[in-house]
Amino acid sequence: MFKRLFGFFPLLCTFSAMAAIEVQDPQVRAMPPSVPNTAGYLVLTSTDRDDALLGAKCDGVKTTELHTLLQEDGMMKMRPVEAIELKQGEAVALTQGGYHLMMMGLSQPLKEGEQLSCELQFRHAESKVVPLTVTRAGEEDQGHHHHHHH
Image 1 (cartoon, rainbow, N blue to C red):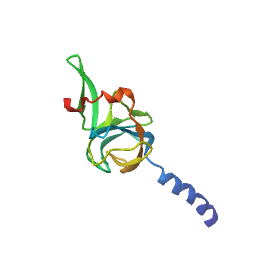
Image 2 (image 1 turned 45 degrees about the vertical axis):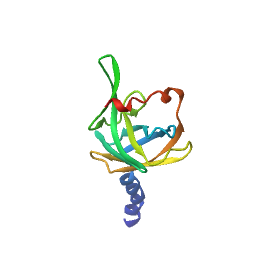
Image 3 (image 1 turned 30 degrees about the vertical axis):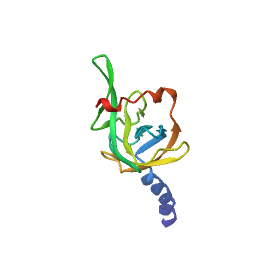
Image 4 (image 1 turned 135 degrees about the horizontal axis):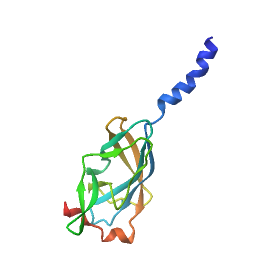
């Protein structure tokens, strides 16, 4: 009886330790030293129920906000959002042209290949610390400083 009961124990531990939120492709863009802001991108999937990303705190960053890009009066404008809804089982990509983590007030320039640790906060799931890999800013990012249009 005990042998059978304890045979399930590792399975139960594995199941209870499963993360409710899966994170894929976490990255942040390295910007020129004169630019104190950058953006973080990743893909989130809530595996066990509907949830929402409510915020983030990143090391070496004064303020991290959830933002989206909207078309207003014929112009693309960035706007903060209160939450990014996550439907169970559906991947939500935070990308350059949509939702993203807006990081304002970098304490020092990011270097390609480094990692920036961010704690993501969710409505239901426990907070999750995610290392974002610093990638080189592409040509499209160099002129992509609409951050002051808030």
